[in-house]
Amino acid sequence: MFQNLDMFKTAMSMARHAGLKQAVTAQNIANADTPKFRARAVADFSTLLPERDSAFALRATRSDHLAGSKEVSSVPTRTRAGAEPNGNGVILENEILNSVDAKRQHDRALAVYRASLGMLRSALSKQ
Image (cartoon, rainbow, N blue to C red; front, side, top):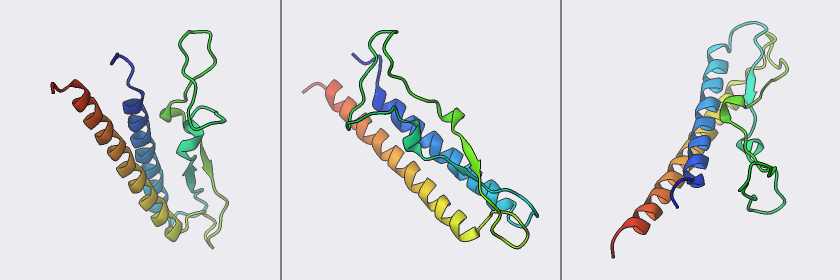
């Protein structure tokens, strides 16, 4: 019953994605004055989720089923075109907004984890 807890995996993937987004944003800010530096951006978390037409994805119960998920470590990053006078693509205002978005995503992942843990505890408690 408790061998495959998908909510915990999703929360962990969301937290890892937020950490990666924060790290890329920090690297962009650190290189804001580097000439010809190409700012990077992380793809949205929704690109990691399986393709689906409805709100719920199908589960693979056998090895020949076609459902699957992508790992956060393989998240594609893209470079942005130069927009500043020194030729790099770092716009500090956008990087600050990206940082805030990464924090919100991390907080959301922790909220999902806490809620899932609370449901698991209540299911296992003796009443």
